[in-house]
Image (cartoon, rainbow, N blue to C red; front, side):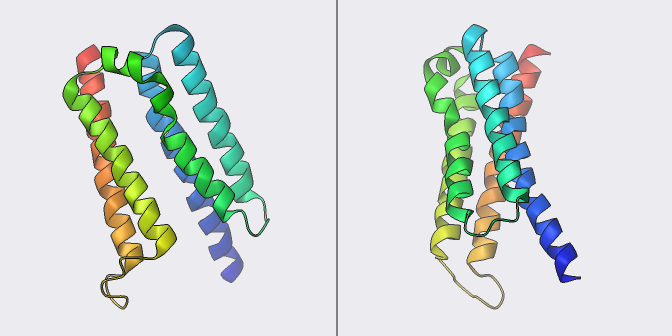
Length: 151
């Protein structure tokens, strides 16, 4: 039903916030130390909770607000860059930054609806998904490398 589709779409978009905060969790716990660990983890999960509430609320016109929240949470790590540089290997750092840049490029594609190479078969939405998959692969690999280092 149309209502069920709307509910599932809200849940789908809410889970993006869980992915962002979930990606911060192993880095905050295993790479960052002391205050930085607590601050980054707290901001990530508080921001995710706020984003989920906004997505699940039936308020129209919050796309820009939640989009800014996605990007802000995504680039939150920049405030702890000195500690990340000390605690991560070069490949881990490169994967983290590359993933962030790919997520950002995908967000630009989604917001601008460009490029839209073949709207009927492979349009801007599919281009956006390709960026998301590549970015997620970078972050997955980065987290796996961090976990392997501490295991």
